Image (cartoon, rainbow over all chains, first blue to last red; front, side, top):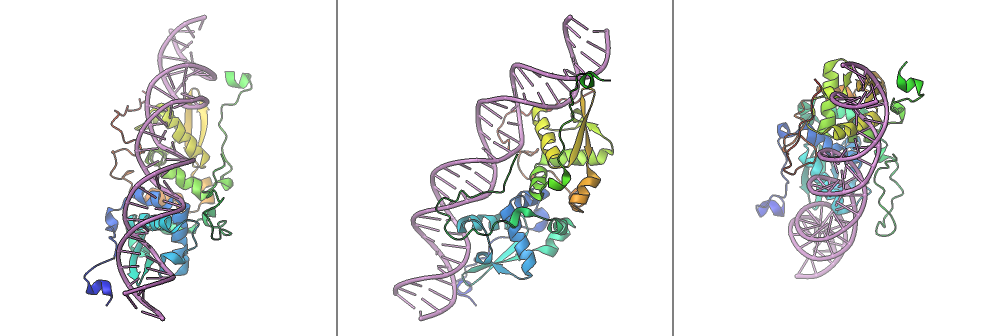
Length: 136
Length: 136
DNA sequence: CCCAAAGTACGATGCCTGTCAAACTTCGAC
DNA sequence: GTCGAAGTTTGACAGGCATCGTACTTTGGG
């Protein structure tokens, strides 16, 4: 039993009933390449992963934001383990609400999460935060 | 021979090679409920349709913009017939580039909207929304 | 020739959201 | 009980894009 449970506090964030999630919201969640990268990493890992264990090109606070959006879209479930927030794909639940959609998406080649290595640490300097390229 | 052909002008807009289209671009196109509505109507009609024959909650110039985005995302093909611009879904071509994705998307229930203002977009002010005029 | 119909092009505008840094909270370890 | 690690919250900001009206172009018909 954790200290939080002893204290009666629940740090588990609210998860939406998947049947109340709209396709609009799902697409808004998945249109962001960082969020799509999270979903892909989660799917590839086959196990729950802490927020900090993802390879993401954004700051911690931005990452928190992205996890929040994914949770609200019914794509992930989150719970605490110590100070780490663990993440799971809600694969089966989601597929019941949107049959075949997530598998179809995951099956696509997606350049959005491949070229982002070499990011390294210091983002405070000259790095202009290249969002996904959008050459007209 | 049309006047355009006599003059050597080609009003056919450029269509991207579907293999150069990224998943990112496709999702950006389909995240807009108006554009999704266009795709759905096109899919339901089973025939080429003029831009003006769609039931859309936006002005003509905005509609033009949406058709442009869909074309750039490799989802539709456009050609002229008189003063009308006809639109076709590039179903098979697209499915070769993104196998199963479009069918999966079309299979989803789509209120085309979250709780916003009823017809999508980010236009949230109280300006009366002029219904686009339908061609007779 | 002139006009209407169908779209396009062009700015202008306003909302949305992705981004960050800084301050704060919670938890486990020492 | 102190410290660091992991995330969250908050506030600010910048750019993107959906939207509109207006002016313009092209086409076809009287």
